[in-house]
Length: 186
Image (cartoon, rainbow, N blue to C red; front, side, top):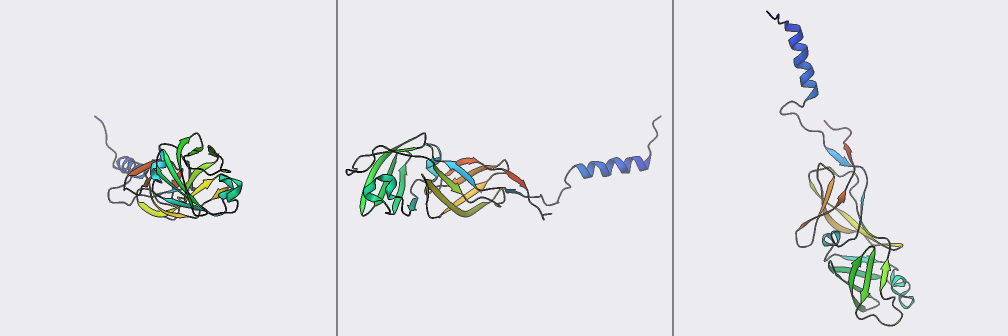
């Protein structure tokens, strides 16, 4: 015959409760540790297609004739981009391994093809809670120039996957963020 000791049963019960979350208790949120830097690739460019990035003084990257000029860069698809600089519109195809732009209408003095490295988008995700869509900013690093911030809707899943809602409403995975348990939370 097995003897049941009430005090032992209570101790086992309390131990099991301390190891699991009780029903109805709030979960402790996870937050992103730092901003996410996502290289622009054929897959991630979908997140910024249709977004115009303004790059003050970046004209010299295109060619010496545009030195000091502001560039407005828009990726129109995963394989095409448009640059507006000094009142001129330059169209290009895009390939990756960095951002490699091949212009179809480049005036003389424009580097063609143009390889830009680094070519990455930084999403301001530091401190963002997981599981909710948040309006934040994104910037494009274009060689040694960083664009002005542009609004972006970003969601970080519990596993750290970062998705950006593109201009057409599609959720595009752009990378994985490091998360940690929020401090000061229940």
